[in-house]
Image 1: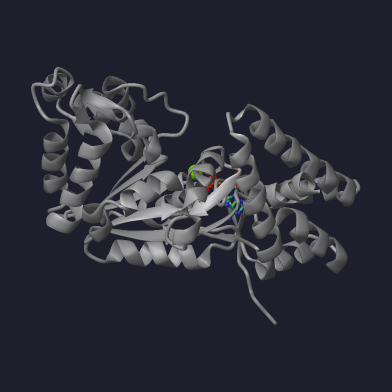
Image 2: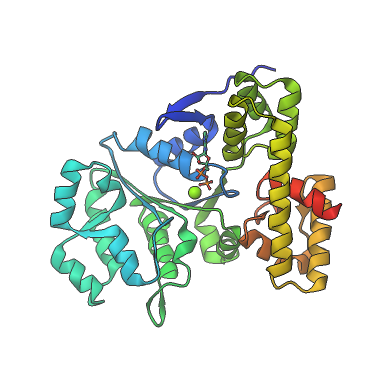
Length: 353
Ligand SMILES: Nc1ncnc2c1ncn2[C@@H]1O[C@H](COP(=O)(O)OP(=O)(O)O)[C@@H](O)[C@H]1O
Ligand SMILES: [Mg+2]
């Protein structure tokens, strides 16, 4: 078995693999916009990193693209106004900022100062203004809009009866399916949110889903062997960490200090266990729900995942709570549940005893 996995350098650190995803996204942008693309996968699987890699290496330096990349992570979006302040600037400030910082153009929309104040006062509709500027740009550019951590727009209201998320998604449908003016990619780890979208008939028809999962065993093996791990050590790391890139980076740096790997992994398992127990105690569960969680855990440990079916639908509310806490990962397209990353499954081993 020879797999040649690329290890590139991105932002001064190793960037592992993701060939398939890079090709998928690059090809996607070459096609005419038809559907919204929802990119989902467990927390820390590498969604943001691969997307930013594609933006910086394939899109930003190519004049045929007009790209906006809005990352809601770390932004305090508590109201419609704070959403506006985070991503929209008056055109005069925009022009000046872009001269000194090319990436500024990625993060902000520009709207005429006067128009922007009317948008803020709700005398004009934000999405109509954005639509106009995209119409203009799309005459000679391929337009792309990427939103990371979209779930943060949930429960933000433009006014008492207008939901920001709903209007934003409608806008995305107009950009893609209806006018084909602009690609829209939406990233999230929150699959409860994805499920909501998936169960909305209109959105389902106008969307496609792309999962960015943790890396597979062959890739992790190749990476660890290149880092000087023995076969035995690699098996141990795979058992505790699976393919979670950020965890693997931790163990590589630990090994470089010549420290004991097994002891470290056992400690990580213990931490995952305590996190689970803490949530069991404080999560407001009924005893019956704890039993359901233990049954889910057992099935994950014995079969690799818990498969949801019609008969098991009473498990769903419990699954959703643990998924919201990012301890379980629920894939609503495959109807499968597993640990958000492998270490949580190792934590479950201690819970089940
Ligand atoms: N392909 C990769 N190679 C190396 N490091 C990666 C890779 N993908 C992700 N990482 C690292 O793993 C961590 C989590 O990645 P991130 O992209 O934030 O995950 P997600 O957006 O899916 O939650 C980050 O510290 C990132 O630098
Ligand atoms: Mg992310």
